[in-house]
Image 1 (cartoon, rainbow, N blue to C red):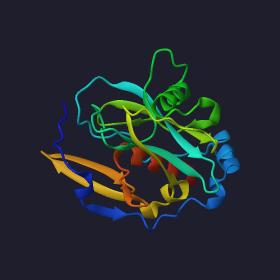
Image 2 (spheres, rainbow, N blue to C red; image 1 turned 30 degrees about the vertical axis):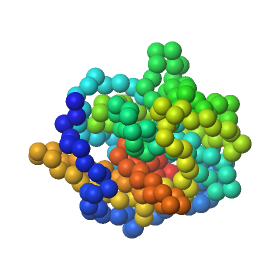
Image 3 (cartoon, rainbow, N blue to C red; image 1 turned 45 degrees about the vertical axis):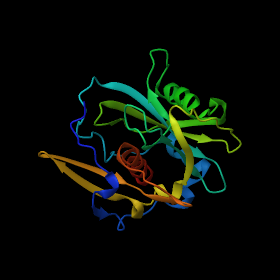
Length: 224
């Protein structure tokens, strides 16, 4: 059971926006620059590692795919989870999920889950590497696996798990001027998170929580 009440994260005030931090340069976001970055990763420290626990459950290993679609402007593919799922329902997320014993490594988990959730054929993905693990308040130990995705891939989202699939410019997500800090206190427990709201036509894509935290770590990795 969750120790947090039901609440709308959009209603929690913004306490800070990082307009003072530099964005990742466009030259560092090209496919070749990303390949070089992961081939020889710098020394870096993730900013967000462990959320305050809000759900009592056994820890479970999981992986997500951070899919960078190689369009003229690199785009990050994200999903909106369906409302009936038991954890993180209705939230914006990367394709991914719990590791299976048969998975050879975290990248295999991420690719398998991405294929199951959105129909992304692993043959269209070039895995670059992984970021540091991220532990959610619901006790998932997540490995984010970053990959380049060919733009000619054809997706077939699983309607049971995925309500929508959309893309956000990588440049938007790697610019801390779009990173908002929030603080929520409940029964003496203080919880903090990032949000990165993105206006996608007539839809406001509210990226927050674990997804935003992993993106913030991706920013720190790219700026190290």
